Image 1 (cartoon, rainbow over the protein chains, first blue to last red):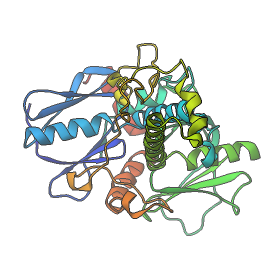
Image 2: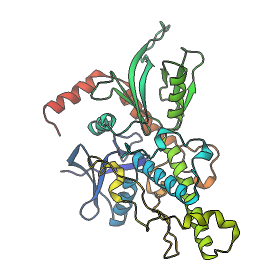
Image 3: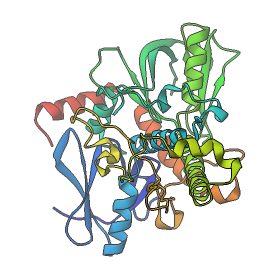
Image 4: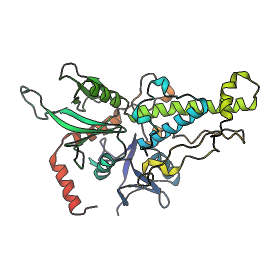
Length: 119
Length: 270
């Protein structure tokens, strides 16, 4: 496999990639239901749940940069953020007896529920 | 612009719960120039909102979406001039097309506008940061309260200290990252642990999502009104280019793209 130099940008739950001299991206990866794996030195990969064998590999300039990317990408999905919210909400509720979302008027919103059906 | 369509389609159609779903009539946007618009037409589509992504399908049973709208840097407003129960999704980027949608009734319209207005990743991140702070403060208060139990002002919180349901500190299971491992494992509970260790006395907040640093070429978002300067990150304009390209790609609704993809799938192309 040939490695191509790309400018890579994480924007919310999308990873955009550019040819280094261009302003518009040539591609994007939606980062939901994906797994970020640290591979060999300086390398990490992204794979998706429906095709776990197919990996998008990225080689970084340094190992430190690689670790930064792995950490950032592992927390990049909307679903991760949602679970963090539900976790914090639950914790605050247990500790203080109050639902912290009430003050924003969003406690009943479907997207913030700790439902049994939600994964 | 390439996109990992198969993964996107999988995410759109898998049975992870949607934040909202229903039929909406979508205004057809004409790309070629007319001297006069000969009236506008609408097409009924099945819409599914998951996180910050609004998918639409030709029909409810369709196996892959026709289109995708990324709900970042946009406003959702009522369209008084158009049809009844109409609303529009408009983007800060002037080049990006607007989406005019029509609901079946008043209640449906209100539900959609509410759901879509709170769908952005940025909004979710805002709320999470707020809760992080509140949790830290709550932990600190409880720790302080624990050290000096005679303070009558903390009597309310002391009741929680004796709660037998409190568990020792656990790390959030890392298997939850990006929804990958929970998928197919029959679901998982996100929490189930408190952030306080009453035996040790030293509280530790749970792992926080890292701040995105623009220097590392990472995420930015549109600044929300009322935010303190510390929470604002890079301006949105470079990224809206990315998203409008994404919208254009999907906004074309070209059957060719779908056919090509279907053909590749049939041929077993990876």
